[in-house]
Length: 418
Image (cartoon, rainbow, N blue to C red; front, side, top):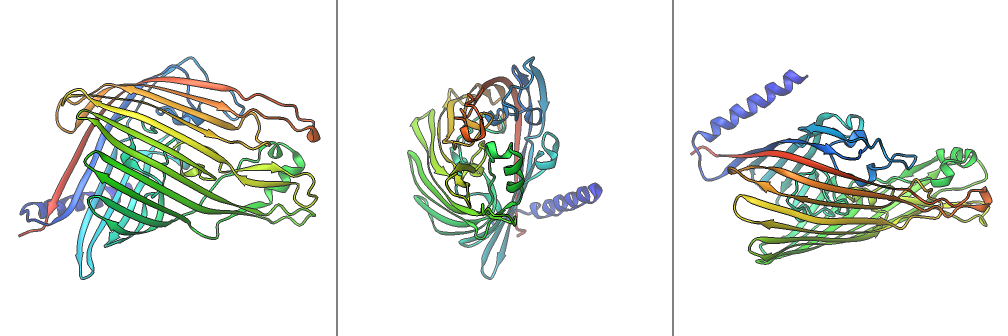
């Protein structure tokens, strides 16, 4: 299988090279990406699956304790990326396609250097379909950092979607999309109780409609201002045959205001303010979308699921000292308004900050150190007298990393033969 993949890639590159021999004016293909090596020292310890990142949710384990704190050295090339864009003329207009992957293993490959699809997307005119950045995600607000995750309080998700862009010009853009739904739930204290845990095992998520997202951006010489929104339906059905009915639903919603402003010729501000409920899986580093609230006076449904409210704030500055040296410095915080039944091991608040000094010795190449800090604070559980559960204060943990990265980017365009 691997040999077939390499052969296909070689044929593709050969075909592209033939097209490039006699360049015309119409672009047909771009091959792009970057090679990146990250190395550094983690003075604390992140979840080993996320050893080369700074991810606040992974600073404490499932029991609310810090991972080993002796410190560890790491090296990785998992951020390295390869992509292809194609442009095809048709009677209905030009079709644009975007295929891109990196080596940052996720899911069953978490912690490994493995293929990870980033984009598989196509556009024809004002319509697009496939997997790409959610409209609730603004990648232009990301600062000039080298760490993989970035500010935890930014919305970030690549999602399968159908998109319509009615307005797209120099100053204004407007787009709406239907996106693949999904959510997670925190069972809290009831996941620890034998009776309730067995009941909750029979409750299954059901997503009957896609998520609705939209974004509007105004751009000018000073930068841009973008407002994105999302509305989503999250349902769950009780398949048990007992006297209880734990079926229910929640409406997830969110608004995100993002901006990149030129404060001076050499200083750029990146800012984001995001708020909503039940949208945690759209955030860069969050946890459960749904929590459980008590209603013990209801004999049929003594507990119910609710969308967890959250708010996130990001402030970063890119400073370009000269054509060779630059610095990114900033801070990010995300806070969840946790429910009464979430335990002291549940994620409440995450903080992220970083500072770097990057050097560009030649075009398309950057290298340099970056200092990163993260903190996780768990929920303070208020207790439950009916279950004889005492109140418990959530733990806090922090981590500091010093990372050194080298990145070389490439981008080659090919054109129609004359």
